[in-house]
Figure 1 (tube, rainbow, N blue to C red):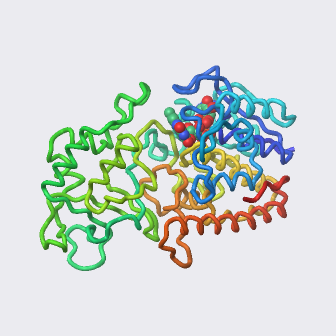
Figure 2 (figure 1 turned 180 degrees about the vertical axis):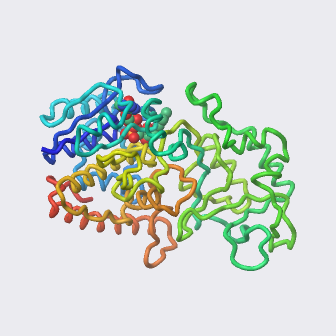
Figure 3 (figure 1 turned 120 degrees about the vertical axis):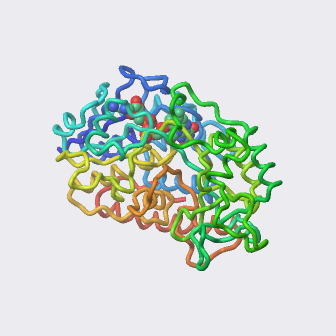
Length: 458
Ligand SMILES: Cc1cc2nc3c(=O)[nH]c(=O)nc-3n(C[C@H](O)[C@H](O)[C@H](O)COP(=O)(O)OP(=O)(O)OC[C@H]3O[C@@H](n4cnc5c(N)ncnc54)[C@H](O)[C@@H]3O)c2cc1C
């Protein structure tokens, strides 16, 4: 029987372990807690939720709802544990966190093909040499000793320790009568940037709200020299009224076609995807709370109705430079980037996805990939019209530079073949297209013998 080693018994690792064990593989899960704690986990349970107890929206025509439908279609054991321990939370899925993690721990403990080792893995080679495949799922708080080992093997620049993500807004929520397309010093051509022009008055009003806005309280382990390389925009503004205007918001080389003049300041927006469905606020890494980002950034001319595909975040987060390291199956490129002979797959937050539900889905995806490899069958291609397929395409596209982890969102989806203006109808169309793609994907998994139980389709 093929032996699989899973490092990290969190959300991704637990899902991968249960799925692979159900498929007949012999699985060892290495989990370092409680012997070695993390700064946020409080128990010895597997799949412990470190913060909120919410798995976000259940609405079928939201990206988070689509992701749940995909987990249901794959009969995810960890998602089913979340459903079994859910509590009332309106349109969202929230769980009793203790009951949830206890249930997942129990499922792993009683499974005849799962062995749990309460040990910190510090040397990849030592565990990889004893098995047929490794799944790395040590999450955003990967232990320092293992992170050092990964960085030593892959090169220090391939592993990041902090998020510094700027907000992303949906293209169709921008006021096109205000924003103009232009690259700096460009006289002709379409330009790679959209620019939001601010006059002196708008700039001053914006900066005064920016510096006064409420920020996320950082945990003790997140303070210190956290953001030296990547200052949040509100910290730059705190250095002086004009500091952003001489940096990220500098207007040089730009002429607003509406006035024929250089604006006082600009916010530049850069496309996040090839289809230009969503735009990143360049240089706007921020630590403001989400409601404050919505309030303050909507003061920027052109963004007054902005819909946020993702808010900016800055927190401790260990993740790989996935676009340069992982293929679409979640496997590290061969010849193995970590200089190991055993195939290594990466799941969960370490692979550059963000969010509880995404971590579970990532564990499922990687388990299917490992199973396909060891069974010698071809894994069906995950359609990029599914919520997780779109995220994986984004996270593993070698063309992506300066990668920041992302959760699922409609800004990552391939455009619809016929554009729909009405937002609600468009999202429903994304969801329906994804559901149909998932249905045929599940069919292919069944045929390939990679899925033993078919989940419900919704
Ligand atoms: C402080 C914080 C708050 C967050 N809050 C939210 C939130 O509210 N909502 C949300 O959707 N997402 C949140 N996230 C993001 C993310 O979705 C979760 O962290 C999620 O748990 C990631 O799942 P995972 O399986 O990748 O990692 P984890 O669930 O963290 O699992 C990784 C496991 O690996 C173990 N481990 C680490 N190193 C080793 C080692 N060397 N050897 C053996 N075991 C090891 C850890 O003990 C842990 O059990 C948060 C992240 C952080 C850091």
